[in-house]
Image (cartoon, rainbow, N blue to C red; front, side, top):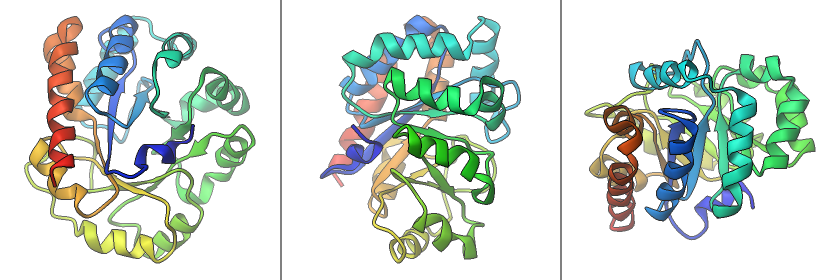
Length: 257
């Protein structure tokens, strides 16, 4: 299984949750229910004390998870348990410090062993990614590249070197829910298409089925994190059915475009 499999013959719906929020047992349940609701790929956030790309919703999830004693090893153990029950690709999303402190090769090797398919490190610029991406290539893990509205002249270089899929950041700033997204997604996707045929998924700010449907017309998939994490923050251990209803509504909206 590869991350690109999420895009086979359909618009992909990628979801994000923070591992250990509110606890790892609930995280396991959420992974299973999101796949059941139609999610095609799941990003697993490894909590970090200084998540610079995140808005207040996901920052809060990081704080809650860390306060329960979640560690990278406990997350690996959780993935090892739940992976055989899942058929969708899984990608870790975390920060360079988490991987550095664990040891880059040890982190990537263990990720491959437990069944992960990719890694996203939003604080690693394209020019500095080699020390991570080369090890990822060695173990068959896709090091996912991000392209932002400000990437401009770098878009072609990033696209040509991308693996799995490209994470297109829809808006400047941090993650979070936005009422409108004004970036010209279509123009950026067109520029990416000139350099690669790797799928493009758009994230940052998408929070409703309507937004997901509209943006999915311009790309290969959409990514939703904060809207799901907000449901988890509101309902805690009882969040599973609410998350299921939300992801099912998003998937249906995408399919109906």
